[in-house]
Length: 169
Image (cartoon, rainbow, N blue to C red):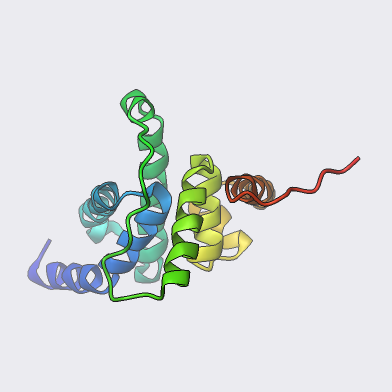
């Protein structure tokens, strides 16, 4: 890359690193893994920087790389063997009210109970604010798949949070 391209990448990185890191944390539930996932996404972006013509698509590219890396990592045998129950780690930013912290901790703990693909859909829909079409594009799947994964993910989250789930029948 030439100097101008390096500067563009550096500016993009500086503007988006915190947001990408937070999204990674929501996907994996661990700040150290989130840092690794964010780094993986930015390294992949840096490698392709010259070939990406549509600069408006940068967020989508990083998001997709991040989600895929998170799902791929969750499939690794060593990751499944080392699942350890631990308290949720608070985000290292400012002070929060006790009630908000408790609600957030419960939500993050519940989110870790949701299977990786469903978790990715929930994070992109409700934390990143993407619509169904945006999530489908980010994950490379159909809108119907996003809708069904969202419904299943929300059901898993409700169970994890101890909410009663209505049964039909």
